[in-house]
Image 1 (tube, rainbow, N blue to C red):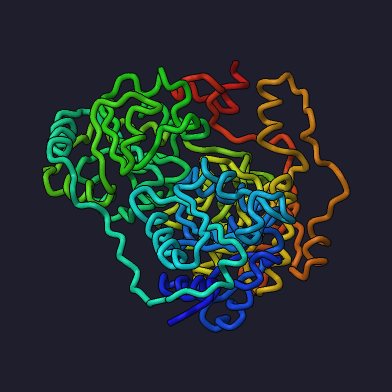
Image 2 (image 1 turned 120 degrees about the vertical axis):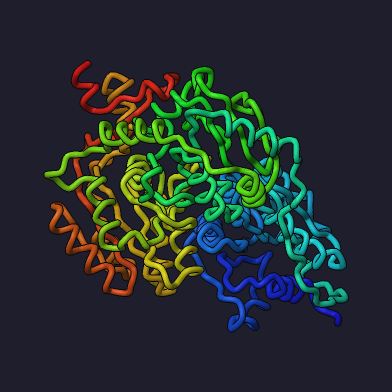
Length: 558
């Protein structure tokens, strides 16, 4: 069957089970969009307001569904506008396929109109990328891209297609996608070593990262934690892998982790690290991290072993497979005395905030209460992101979508649109700061255009909150370029874009605003006015050990 390149693109997307794509058309990609028009009943296209929004939407779709997210962009600025979203997915190991089109093959390398070397630009931030100059290679390349995005440690893949390749014809034969299965080949010696170290431990602690979610290992992780009888902490990316309501759960680890987790990890004699990469935001001073512990690291990517922190033993393999094997070998452990000590830390060092005013933590707890913990929460980056991580109890994987590695302001709204497109059954809430919301707030228009009923909550403190917090604590209160106290009215802005806008200045106003948003069934922006000097507590100062976490009370006593 002879098909054009653009027909092959669409047929291959259908082969891969793609039902939704996010993008923005332009001259170089017109042939693909023309073909997409003919298949609009099979593949839904979400036209975003900006290509960055399309990349983040593909990312959010992937995180929420576990499938590969797909975004489309034209050449030149269309392609470069995807870069931040691709880098965000790369840092957090999210499987997306970005399809860009370029100028014709004969025009490549001649500084043609809207020509850019997007494969060269994205080489460091993709798992792999391709430029397809021969239409006969197109189908095989697309199939390979999806397999690479999903296999092992997932990640973004980019395919760049010159415009004439989308018009040229080639033989197309439909194929079933090859199932990407995790390797069952785990080193027996590594498993035996891990089991022996767990048996010897008196004070084990489990630290969970995003890898446990990506491998779908939540059930195996739960069984493992109960068998080891150890407290569990997580990274920002690991939230929801282990239930945040379980008695063994002690909250997040690291710079804004709980004192319980930071102290507990600093005191444990064995740290079992599952699908986490020892980010500097987790370890604090890496030389002082978990100094009293032997460390076992379980990860699919051998390159993560001994990269940031020296470990005692490693098990290389898919998290789900490794935990299943360990659970088979492990007998029930008993660490009642240690677990009790950590429980006392939880009682002694709870997360606290000022209960009498509208604040970020109150907003997050109220969202948790009204959604009964069943929503998908996306965030931007900053104070509101930390509050969303601290005060919402995530009990299931793929319900907390946030930019962990790159820390991308402007990520959350696009991600929310992607998540809601893939999980229409879920309430989807994007929690933003006013600084982040400004970056990509144009995607509210996308939500309205496609009637995607996301709830956008803006924690509006009229400053760049996290940067200001650092300026307050470490830069002598010199608030350089962090005050946003201007005339922007987010309620009017929401209404101008066709959404519902509601302002909340008190706790009661927010309660009723969110309740209304839950029942409206259309895009809503809630502008929550909070104090400019609210801070995220606890905190670890840059360069300090996580055992030196301090909070507001410590600061006052100092």
